[in-house]
Image (cartoon, rainbow, N blue to C red; front, side, top):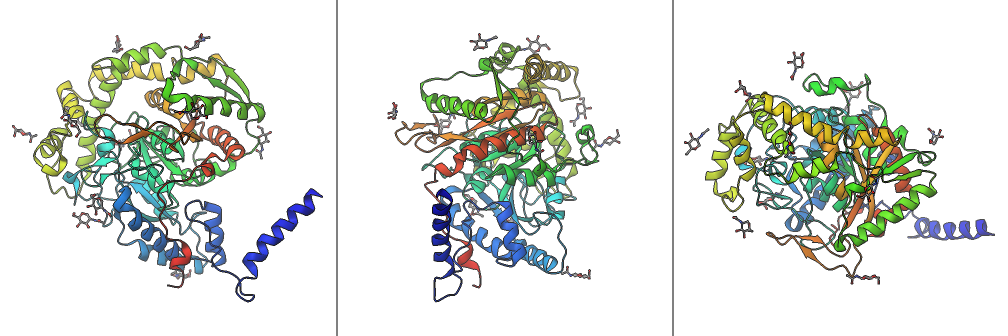
Length: 548
Ligand SMILES: *[C@@H]1O[C@H](CO)[C@@H](O)[C@H](O)[C@H]1NC(C)=O
Ligand SMILES: *[C@@H]1O[C@H](CO)[C@@H](O)[C@H](O)[C@H]1NC(C)=O
Ligand SMILES: *[C@@H]1O[C@H](CO)[C@@H](O)[C@H](O)[C@H]1NC(C)=O
Ligand SMILES: *[C@@H]1O[C@H](CO)[C@@H](O)[C@H](O)[C@H]1NC(C)=O
Ligand SMILES: *[C@@H]1O[C@H](CO)[C@@H](O)[C@H](O)[C@H]1NC(C)=O
Ligand SMILES: *[C@@H]1O[C@H](CO)[C@@H](O)[C@H](O)[C@H]1NC(C)=O
Ligand SMILES: *[C@@H]1O[C@H](CO)[C@@H](O)[C@H](O)[C@H]1NC(C)=O
Ligand SMILES: *[C@@H]1O[C@H](CO)[C@@H](O)[C@H](O)[C@H]1NC(C)=O
Ligand SMILES: *[C@@H]1O[C@H](CO)[C@@H](O)[C@H](O)[C@H]1NC(C)=O
Ligand SMILES: *[C@@H]1O[C@H](CO)[C@@H](O)[C@H](O)[C@H]1NC(C)=O
Ligand SMILES: CC(=O)N[C@H]1CO[C@H](CO)[C@@H](O)[C@@H]1O
């Protein structure tokens, strides 16, 4: 009886699509670009329902519609339509470069490409600078037939410049705001990548993370974000903060989409020796980890001492409790109070005027920035060091100095050493301990766990210090009666009705397959993303560009 009722409903809705307009197939049944996933996009390219050029045109129109309000994209690739046409011709010819052949993506404006696009970290100092080749991750996307559609705006210098700036602001790209509430803090530093994926300005995007910069904007913008193990994805020709903590990863609307992208960008690279540590010659196909049953028999820990809820976080706390029930009913064993043994050291270090974490990033930045700049083949403003960069920023008015100060750099420069100094290594030893043995790795081992979970807001710090992977997936959003809470200096809405937040799965190094499996099993049982809609959505859809 139930079956009959269901199939009757299906027939009804199908007939609406098929018999509209005197028997002709109603062609407005294209997928909504706000939600469409990899597999549907590929199916349409394969069947000829749309082309890569159609997708590219539609996404460019969506960027142009939304940029005046949200400022998520700093530049559109002038070659995007030509590249899409080439990829369409290849497909017609039977040349399929990868599962995502012909699909457009955005990349953060700190990932260099050897084309007409600038790579700036949001600073005017690097406009017109040229690189000798694509960043390795960008080259891998190109080889896989991804259309590099444009560059996404970011917190300038990946949030490593000022002690008085806002998430998502860069001098070059302006202020990104999130699409779930007017003037929403988009989080950062991969702010434009977050907003771009959240409202379908592209299929998905790449972000980069040193400490929270993929996870936080994925959480706030209702996305799945994968922060890979340091060394899984190459950082070559990505504007750095810290070689010990930086990593590049996907920000997408589903675990499936993120897994497709990670499978393309992972892998060894002679230009980034950290990738030599990968325990496999070719990285896994992460889509093989998309297993609805993966939580059955899994042991998942909750490091309670890493959680401090206050009255504003009640919705997060409630959603976390509900998430725990979902994990249990999916067959996981929950081990509560699987605490971090060195949590107090981490907190003391974070609160110190110049803690060890600060020293690691400061000293790495001095060395790593100079190394990046040394690779440029054209450097119009002659920026070769952090001191040069600081001078440029202090004197170029659009950089908004001194209101947006250079407090972070001032501290880096005042250290007086870089990451070849013994004091760097002492600090690094200390932070890897509290992130690893005293943090995630210790808890996994002590309680014999497969992964740890925390609300994403609480998850980035320890994995960052130890180079460990984290996957975030939508967990909930603030209810419609939430009190609006704005950031102190800049008035961006940090908490407010409908603003999303995520759940993080944290694991040991190279455990991405496990974490992706868990995130997928959770996502498929909850589908939180669908339950909340952005206030701002661009109107252009495939129907508006096909045949036009
Ligand atoms: C089509 O395939 C032929 C034979 O492999 C090749 O020579 C040609 O360049 C291809 N054209 C395109 C547009 O890929
Ligand atoms: C790169 O910057 C230059 C100088 O501002 C500008 O003319 C050019 O259009 C930019 N490239 C793109 C793709 O926006
Ligand atoms: C990687 O390691 C090799 C061998 O030690 C070294 O020759 C090379 O310069 C390193 N490459 C980079 C980019 O650091
Ligand atoms: C999915 O995960 C379950 C639980 O770990 C396992 O028993 C099953 O073999 C997995 N399925 C596949 C196709 O790997
Ligand atoms: C873990 O941390 C929580 C919160 O700080 C605390 O209440 C609990 O006693 C701790 N449990 C263990 C086993 O350390
Ligand atoms: C930094 O690490 C050193 C050990 O190298 C330790 O003695 C010191 O207490 C740490 N600093 C802070 C602020 O925790
Ligand atoms: C780091 O500092 C050492 C010692 O002062 C110096 O020899 C080296 O060139 C510096 N490296 C970078 C990349 O700045
Ligand atoms: C930066 O500017 C100051 C003051 O104008 C100058 O003394 C210093 O040499 C400059 N440093 C660099 C690296 O250009
Ligand atoms: C920080 O920025 C805010 C917002 O523009 C401004 O009001 C404040 O004066 C700035 N603080 C400093 C110390 O410059
Ligand atoms: C919002 O509504 C819920 C359920 O009615 C209530 O429990 C909560 O206190 C309200 N929150 C605010 C900030 O008014
Ligand atoms: C492509 C694009 O819209 N770029 C914009 C980025 O933001 C700056 C500052 O808001 C604008 O001037 C650009 O036009």
